[in-house]
Image (cartoon, rainbow, N blue to C red; front, side, top):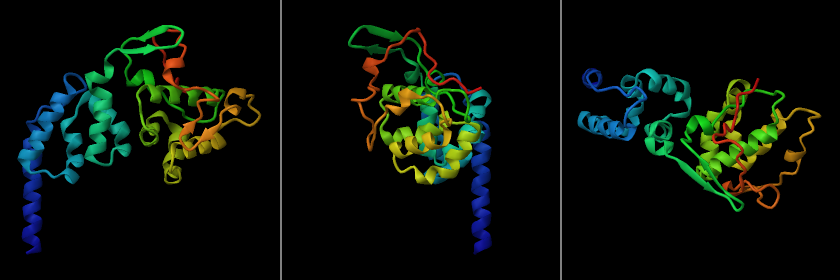
Length: 233
């Protein structure tokens, strides 16, 4: 009976693989949401359950989209997580013009996409950590992310030593505030004259507005496009 069950399972897997070979792969261009709808229909027609769908994702991506997935697969353990990040990266709605209104003036940022918002922290360096954290917080507020979502997406901003440190310690980050506290302890340079960060007052809900106001309506943008997190040297 077990042998028959195993053979049946293998046969089903082979059918799925064969059918997906003729499915149009997403290469990073085109309507991502429409393609995702086609993929959902295909999975439904093939009887692929939600838990199994993530294992077939490499079979339906190519070029830029495949490279993006290969680099980020470790933060997409489920199909739902993949869907969220896939739409975040490739949906045209994310690339629509974002208008920012401030109390003093109206500022416009055109064609803001994920690459403009999320950069990377790799290791200890001469980069001002407080500036990096503030810019990350501003970008996430601009995208109206919750603290839980910030904690989920922050890995996309970390590379090298910083990324390894996050993976080794992510079990200890129960809140966004706890992540901020721990990354400061690890990556702030000893003796660094970082007065701006020293003024920050942490609370369970993030950084208090009465110390440094991170709300995007008070952001002063000096360029048409702002790359919020430049890679560390």
